[in-house]
Image 1 (cartoon, rainbow, N blue to C red):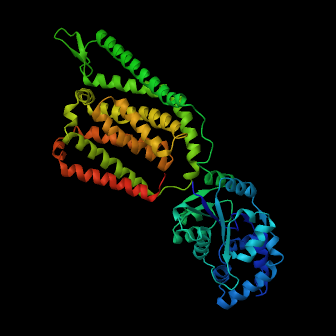
Image 2 (image 1 turned 90 degrees about the vertical axis):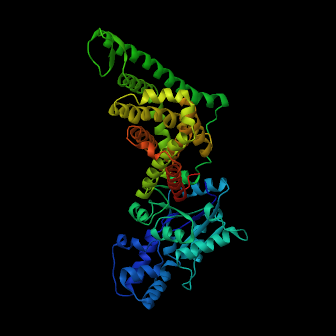
Image 3 (image 1 turned 180 degrees about the vertical axis):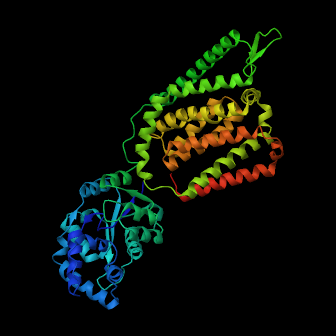
Length: 499
């Protein structure tokens, strides 16, 4: 949540179409240009008038200045009041004011007119600073208006641009904000389209006054009032259900396969038999199929909880993710996933952690005893889906509602690590679990966490079958992979800070 809010006026706080477009008509008629369709004059709403006259009617400087004078002739006493507030604006400003926000108006319209409009609608009291252009034609560029508004808003204190939003409806607002170095929130209920705002690379986009209010006030919502024991139970209950369902399914699956193996002959792909053809044990393929069954049942056991929590989390996140992420960010996430997955595996091997953990050795022996395609289906796809439904879908989705985001991400990662039950996988799971939850929050899409999990599992599983992979187990390769992964993660974080 940011405390300093700069609002554009036309198309953001008020709908000035009738007044502005009628005054443009009046100005054009003085040049012998008749434009009866007000809709065609909507592009004049927002940008500096001089630029618009020059852009849309090819006026030179002198003509544009003369047109502005004719425009103001009508606007000064008539057009200025042919205006209306968007529904919900007074209520939103009151809510923002009650939360201690510092608000200003930064408009390309002359300051004199801005103040009269704000006072006319009774909302001037909410703004600490009101800045517009000057009647003499100076300070008309949006970045100049924003700079002056910030200067007045912060006074003698240093300007904290990271705590400021510029809110407007046109590309001019976005471009002005970017030149000054503040983030911009675009609104599509005004006169700028979603396409215009996206093309201008607006940081955030909302579609209504209601969404704008929710966005600006996010973080001030009343948190769920749960006791400590209730919060712990929110994490423990789905974990227990998942754990018990998986273990029951593993036992049932093993019994079913043993029964089938005892009643049939052959089946060397799944069963090991003695010289008399009697069943002695199951192959690694059968063990992995049983594991796949266990993960599938465990995932289904928390499916309903996960479905509801993921839907609720998506609703919480949607205002931050209306604008599509650029392809660059997906590439950076992929780089972070691959680099960290490889680097951490090499590091754990070189540090001797792998050899020192008997529990992990047993787990690895079972996982890698199967035919590659079967192992990939189980540990590359079924296991990640089931685990993500629990750890990011349910657990992270619940605790992010009452914990600060960095803490919620870390707690979900630690829970994920403890679940694995051995030091090797626990160390790896903390780092990758953090990346999974971070990706979920960053992109606002549960599938991103799932994608990180699948890519990391498939990559490490396949590499264990690649001949000569031991040549990668050296410190230079470890450092390169970790540096590349961390660098991609850092670049992703610098591109958009989520906390």
